[in-house]
Length: 92
Image (cartoon, rainbow, N blue to C red):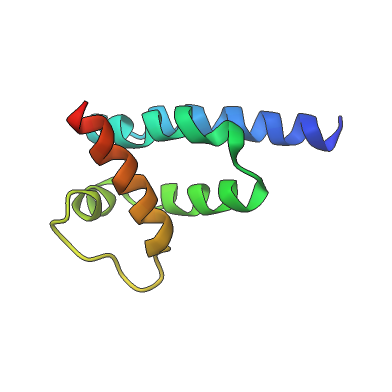
């Protein structure tokens, strides 16, 4: 298996996880984001997405909806990218 195969499998697994979170609301935030962006992400970008996806859905949803401020350990810059992507899709 090559490094290209490894990252292709990783991308596929991330896309699956993004669409099968456990809560439909987060599926609808992270699934479309992953579909649109995962293929162009390098390992660092995938790491950032996986770290964000390791957060619990209820907390993550409150951050995405602007109902709570995420703790300092959360990659706010990346979360803002996800939120902006979701906002554009919600308006379409």
